[in-house]
Image 1 (cartoon, rainbow, N blue to C red):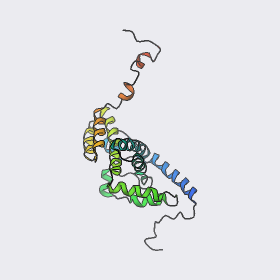
Image 2 (cartoon, rainbow, N blue to C red):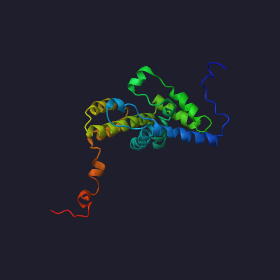
Image 3 (cartoon, rainbow, N blue to C red):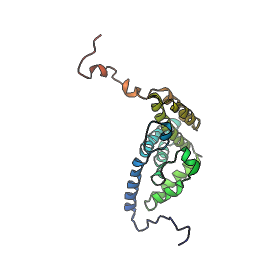
Image 4 (cartoon, one colour):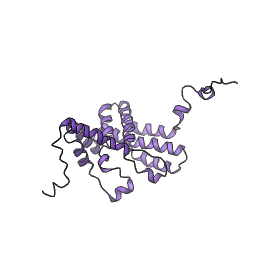
Amino acid sequence: MTTEDLGKVDMSDRDRLTRLADLVFEAGMLRKTPRTGYQFLGSGSENVAEHSFRTALIGFTLALNAGADPYRTMAMCLFHDLHEARTGDFNYVNKLYNAADSRRAMTDALAGTGLTDVVMPLHDELEAAGSLEARLAQDADQIDLIANLKEELDLGNRYAAAWIEAAMARLRTEPGRRLAQTLAETDHAEWWFNGPDKQWWNRKNGVAHKD
């Protein structure tokens, strides 16, 4: 066995459907994989699966507004952190001292599933950021963070304001900047607290509002 063979993942003895089952279980690990930056913010928490879901939703809407391919953008968002089921999530300080081979982790995760030829080009496109869809997907990643930070800011964590400013500076597209700015100016609770039926609070115990 050569040094190159050490650590190589070999799933060649498993059929495609079994490897797809493996992938389903592996993706489930993202529910148990925390996003570690909140350790430094001092409040808030999130796992990678939660982050990936809303990032995909944001990417889809951004692409529609930008005239880009919403499905390719959404797919890039959906898979963008799948490798973290194997590598874990490295925050900014972690990355000063550690490096993860995300491409190798993705390649090993997809091996034998029949998805490699579809998903790996999306991974590489996202990393290269040469297409509008890739830049929108990268913006969606940051906008999901900005939304979480705005919630923490609304709840009293003053440090979140500086984090929002830093995340804003990383945005690559005009549609992304517009949405992020609107998020930063919108109270995170308004969608339900001031929802379509503003008298709900007065009627919730069956008592009509009296002037």
